[in-house]
Length: 109
Length: 114
Image 1 (cartoon, rainbow over the protein chains, first blue to last red):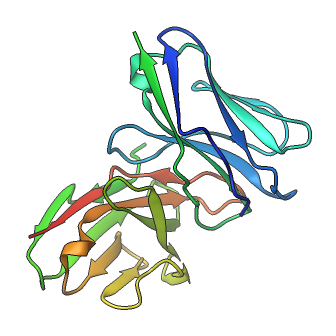
Image 2 (cartoon, rainbow over the protein chains, first blue to last red):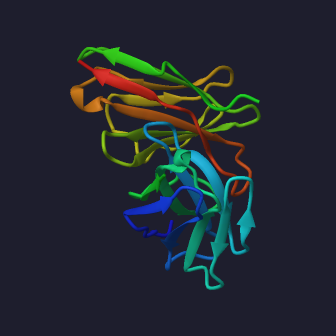
């Protein structure tokens, strides 16, 4: 599975969009990009995943560059409850997820 | 539609005892993954099971740890002769096994070794 690189931490004002970047320059053609978050000590929560097209669901949007070397997770209107560690993971068809250190997002009032 | 259920949520054991952690996957899911999270660290993969089969155990310690996912009932992660270093949060995830479908996690079992 491809290695991903994320900023260690980010701040975002409540009500504003949170844009979390992820680099995955060695991603292969069959690897999807998955985003999870972990709030405090809870279990990781699945957010969204995609291959090459942009994706949107009720939680977030995922923008993947045309060359697939990077992506951005967008939380359109961040709330205090979105404060968490966000993980970007590139994974092939099946098998385990490899969690890096993620981005610690702090949403501030 | 219940999510992944893990129990117990908290487990305290003394050194040398056995710990048994249980995981019931989401309805319709037949693939189970176990991860361990040490304090202040990220999740580390341990083992991947499908009903009655171990698919990948590359992350399991060679001794004292075992996992099963029987035809009926929950998946069990078993730790024999626990030591202080086994103190961690153990998370279970499940998936349908369909290509590229996401894994969904339970809220974990916090194991504390006295």
